[in-house]
Length: 117
Length: 111
Image 1 (cartoon, each protein chain N blue to C red):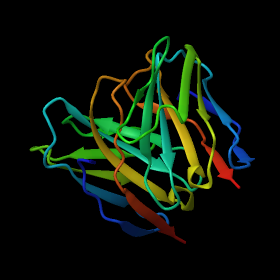
Image 2: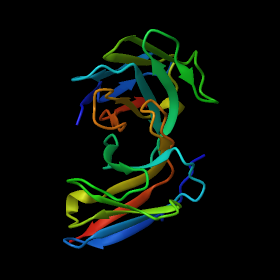
Image 3: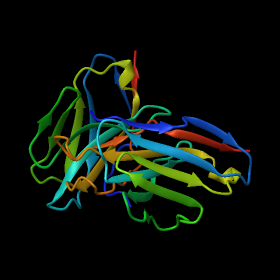
Image 4: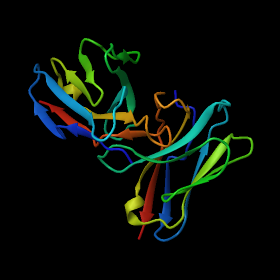
């Protein structure tokens, strides 16, 4: 199947700083990518839908000014956690669909574990 | 809110078939049934999806009831590497539709 990568895989930052997470589709172009957050022993919660060339669509309760999403190209979306706090510590996962694939399945990145100290 | 109901956990002996049920009684006519799994600390992995006919691929089989209100994912010969959380999701097949994850079933393969 198609490959989605994320960078970094792990990051530790101090409270109040900003962290950028990259999501790349390696062998296909994705006009839409999705960002999820997962707390320990919990399910994935969709944060926002990232649209290439336009503004992201955020889910209810997700602060758009805190979680900045940029989808500047068909293979790259970035999530920036601004002014991070310990409660932002979580596992962040992106996904994308390969429009040239056989089905409509989405492919997920390996995730980024953020720890805010 | 997730539109599916799955058992919280299941065990299966290594080498046996693992049958994971999912109820989706409010599924709409244009919604497919998707199955993903998540191995600890990794991103979810696509397994299979279907509309109303049974489907089979190299990973698993999907059996959907005639009324489409429930389905079963079958891993024919479970291995220890199949230990994961399995998510059943219903969604239109528009490709860019967002996926809503429920709590899933934690499947443990017993040696």
